[in-house]
Each structure stands twice: as structure tokens, then as C-alpha cells.
Length: 446
Image 1 (cartoon, rainbow, N blue to C red):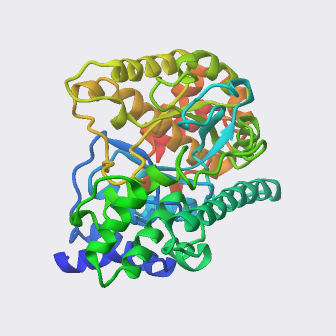
Image 2 (tube, rainbow, N blue to C red; image 1 turned 30 degrees about the vertical axis):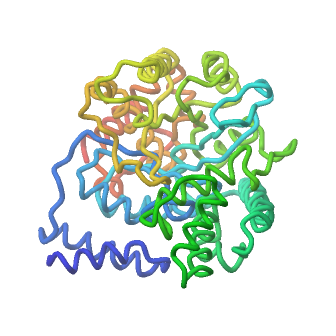
């Protein structure tokens, strides 16, 4: 396939029109099939934590775009995660199937942990509040109960955003934005985030000062109290990050402190995730906060409320060739998860400029941990497939009955995830009447 045509199809993958994305992906899949599009050889690299444009991806990637790029670069497995919504789940899992990619799709939100109400966990400056996940959600279709819960957390987030804009309009005047007109149009399904708001303000300011570059620079320097250069305008990562850091985080004029009940409890979120067919998952930051210094206690509380996995963003937790507290904590949490039998999900996020498409697994620091990360990827992929097929997922009654020991459970789902080729999913027939041994035997016959 000609380079220009492939570039056009890749651009089309980020269209807000779902039919346009679908057509582009099918054309790429056809090109892979006939050999006119080449991809890298399969590696053991994974990224299961990439945000899409349904919440915020710094490059504007859709679920289909991420699936294609993961296949293009030879990923062993790929996964998406979005804040407060499951809008990209079905599209991504379908796209991954076309790309013959092991895959899973997840959701992230913030929760309240009452037992740690006085301790900062992984949300800087917000004691008791934690970023938290539902991993490997098998589909976007939800029960009425789950739909109601999901709508409530999205509504809470959007209410906070409107309050934030009201405060920021007062401070950033004469540059002001409207949430409905200037922000919602930046996302395909109306799920705006702080990062969308930053972009809207940057664009509105550029429009307001369109006849005066010096005035625009002076405006932002005064409002943000930070050194900027003409090269940082009108909407570079440096400016967008400065807007968010200086105005929206704790201490900023737009910061909205969460009220009591502003976020669901961890237990409530975990119940929703199980209802949606996923795996409740703790999001670990770096082990340095007062809350994460008590990680054994935190995980004990989390597991009692339903947590069965843990997420790590490795890239921010080490510097190649440097032995410091960050890498010590990284290795410590991996070993603790091994001890507890918690599968690990890893990825780079991709919701802030500068974050990589995939972690540097070739470094000494990550190379020795990669087998555990690949094991987790296999488990999340296996759970997704088996939950879709016959509700035989990692936390199902079937799994608890046949695989009561956590080691047996992890071994089964890892072997399944390692053995099942994505191209064979359509031919796999399983039921709750089968044993784990029966299912593994079926895989050998595909």
C-alpha cells in the first residue's frame, strides 16, 4: 500500500465519525491480510493502559487507532482505559480482533477510601481520594444498575468541570470559555476532562489575541506566573501543562475541593466493576505518599472490598541506570503482588504530552520485571475472552468453584491467554459445564 494512502487511513482512524474509523480500520486489516501493509515482528512488549479520545489522549488517538498502532509495532498485548466512561470498549475489542491483537479495555475514576481519609494516596493533595480502576471490562453493554452508577460518576465529574470553568473565567478574563460550546466539541462523546478545558482556554486566548503575539505571551506569563517563550504558544504541551498545574490543581484558582460524597467509595466502584464483568484494580502511583507507604494495609483493605489486581505506570517509576527510591518501590510493589497473587497491568497512560507509546522494557530495570507484566497481560486478555464467551471470567462463580486457590487461578488464565491466538477467538466454544482442563484441551484442538 502506498505510504500516502496509509497515512490518510491512519488520520481517518481518529475521526469523530465511527463509520469513518471502521472503514479505515477494515482497509488496514485488508492490507495486512494481502501483505501490502507490513507490521513489526511480535515482541513481548505490552501497553494495557492507554487513554483514548473518549477521555483524553494527547495525540488524539481513537480506540481503533491505538489497536492499529499496537499491532503495527508488534505488541504482545494492548489495552485502553478511559476516565468515567466505557465508550471505547466495544470499538477497541473489535479493532483488536481485526488486528489479531491480545486485548483488554478498562475504566478509571476517582474513589474515596474511608479507612485512609486522612492520608494522601495517589491523588496529590487530596487525602482519602484515590485513582482507581476496573480492568478488562468485556463489553460496553451494562445492566440498568451499572448504567445508573456510571452515569452518576460521569455527571459528578462534569459538574466539577463546570464549577472549575466558572472560577477560571473569573480569573482568566477577558479570555472566557463556555463548557458546552468550547469544550464538549473537543471530545467525540461529551466526556470532557481537565485537559480538554486547558486546550479550550489556550485556543480561546489565541483567538482573543490573534492580532498581538506579544500580548498573548504577556497575558499567559501574568496569569500563570511562569516563564514562557513565543515558541510555547499558542497550545504547546508546555503551555497546556502549565495551565493545568497553575490553575486547576490544589492551590490553583480553579481547583474544586471534593465535598463529602463527591466520589464513590472504593467498595462501591468495585461492586460496579464486578457487575460490569471486570476486575477491580488498585492504581499504584509510586509508593512515596503517606498512604502508599502503608501499601500492605491499603491492599488488605482493597482486597477485602473486592480488588483483585493492580495497575502500574512503570515509566515514571525509574530512571535508566539509576538506583533510587522510585525503582526500589517499583520492585517492592511487584514482589508484593507476586506474594498476594495480584495480576499486574502496566501502561504509559498517553494522556499527557511526553508519555511514551510503550515503556522502555529493554532497560535493565524493566527487563527483569517484564515476565510478570506479560503474565498479567495474558490474564486480563483471557478474562476478557472467557467473560465474553460464557461468563467464565477471573472473578466468576465458575472460576471460584474450579480454581479456588489464587495460584491455580492465575496459572489457568495465564496459560489460556498465552495459548489462545486472537484469530481463533471466533472458533472457540466454551460453556460453564466444562472444567478448566476441558477448556485448555479445546485450545490445543483449535
